[in-house]
Image 1 (cartoon, rainbow, N blue to C red):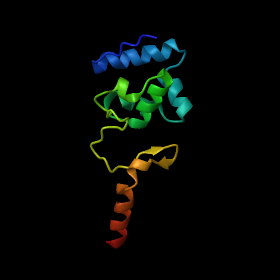
Image 2: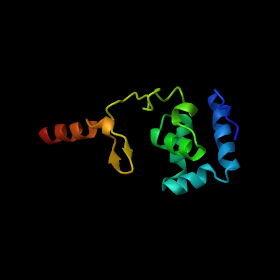
Image 3: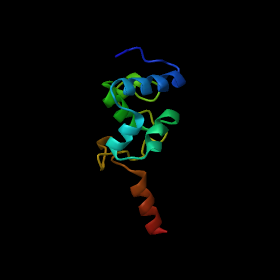
Image 4: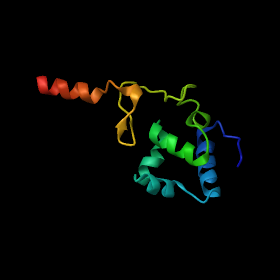
Length: 112
């Protein structure tokens, strides 16, 4: 497999699709394996989506930070505009996001 990951996001996306096809897979097959819609996987092209980025990278045998260095920190955590937003992975909240905005929001609604 070609290890040269393009820096240009448009070329990178085409490269990702090519790499998946070369393994006998596709974005559609990946969405079926994950049990999500086709659009969920496609969103990773346009916006940071850690769960999908992890799944694509794992399928290709890379780390997400190798494919999307502008979206991931060197320690393997996603760069987030909303750092307190809970990220679900395998239906559990990640350890790093123990203070979820959703919990705070629910508490505020109950008090109002």
